[in-house]
Each structure stands twice: as C-alpha cells, then as structure tokens.
Length: 115
Image (cartoon, rainbow, N blue to C red; front, side):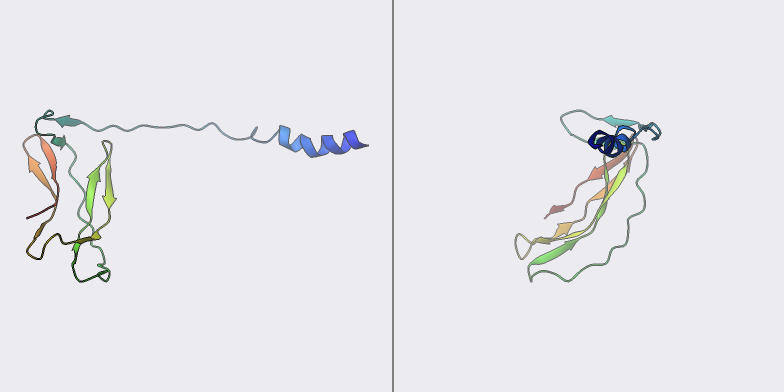
C-alpha cells in the first residue's frame, strides 16, 4: 500500500515540464563604431528616442540639484536612466546636462558635468 501511495505522489513530478514548449532566443544587433581608445567616443547609428518628461520630486536638502533622466546606449538598444537629485559640489557650481550630439559618423553621448 505504501508503494502505491509513493507512486501516486511522485508520478506527477516525473511528468513535470514535459508539456512545455522550447524557448527561442533572438538577438538583435545594431551598428556601432568607435573612434579608438584616445577619445573613447562611441558612435551610434540609430538616433536616440525623445527625452521623457519626468516629475521632479521634492529635493532631499538645500544643496541638491535635479539632474534630468537620459537615454543610455547599451550596445544593442537605448535604455532610459531616470533623473535624480545630486549634491552640488560648491555653491557656484553649475550643472551642464548630458546630451546626444549628432556627428557625421552617428550619435555621440556627451556626459553631464559640473562647471
């Protein structure tokens, strides 16, 4: 009787996963060229999407500045990086937004920085 009980319990586990379909993976690549190690610029032939409009939350303190989100290139596609609050390094520091610049060879990311 015990053997029949164990078989009834284990039988469904033996067939688990037998009815699933195989997984198919598709990889999409885009053309990207680099200028070399000296400049480190990556040229992307696909234009970035339009910048998203984000709701700016309440600043966590008096010396914080909101930096807008931007589209980051992953090597395959653009991924949105949301905006965030950053501490201003000095009272006179000015944040220059990062942006995508169009060049003859494609699109290049110019990172944001303090001046």
